[in-house]
Image 1 (cartoon, rainbow, N blue to C red):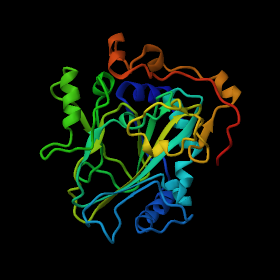
Image 2 (cartoon, one colour):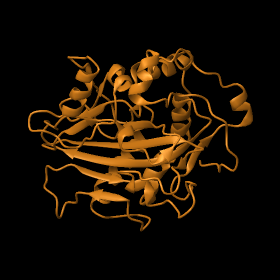
Image 3 (cartoon, helix red, strand yellow):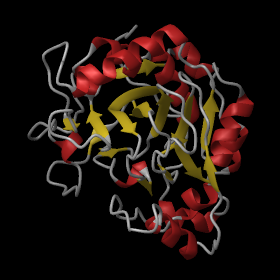
Length: 319
């Protein structure tokens, strides 16, 4: 599935590119569902949790985004609930199993504005343990001038003092918060990597990884992408009564007096067997703590370093 070298690269750089994860036929089926979905055609009859932009009310050059579209469309669900992708995230996170936290479907046409540099961990913190691995899948050609995803090297992800407020782009920059975090870490010129991905290729990144995308400057193009966020299988909501600012998307499914994350909304997509756990060894990156280059860095981002975890019972098999 993944080599030790790939896992080490993920923990060293904060992200990992996997080319041609999805075959061309599947990508074509996924891409063909994007416009109908934004037009309000929900195959299952269930609305996504978020739906921004539609062709009747939105500007032609505006970005479109949906959250938890897996509930609305079976083709998208076949990928969002993929055990293969879940297993990759478990290997990268050092987890014994993987639970879906959420998905996001994006369409960014010519002229669509930038997505401010941000960390996914800054708004995905309604659960514990507070760990997350994200898979960003290109459903069209993703190139720098066409608003492809871009990353800031791991040193900023590993040395941030806190989760900076975001999604407030300033007129002249798409990365004001990231640049502020970089200066705080003593980095004058952050190393930003712009990716070029073929349809069906993807990038996995750690929740603390700073990332974003530029404006789509390519006429007659629409950048389409699917983003899947995974957390450890044994994750639970934070204790009842705890105030979690910004946790509305996941928090709406929290039952009164119960911290369990219901599989109807947060399905387990991969679970190791006892044999898998027996032969699962920490990678060199996990053992050496490369994600936190020295002990003092733990004070910046917290101690959610990837470590193997015990399995849980009752996980259902998802094809």
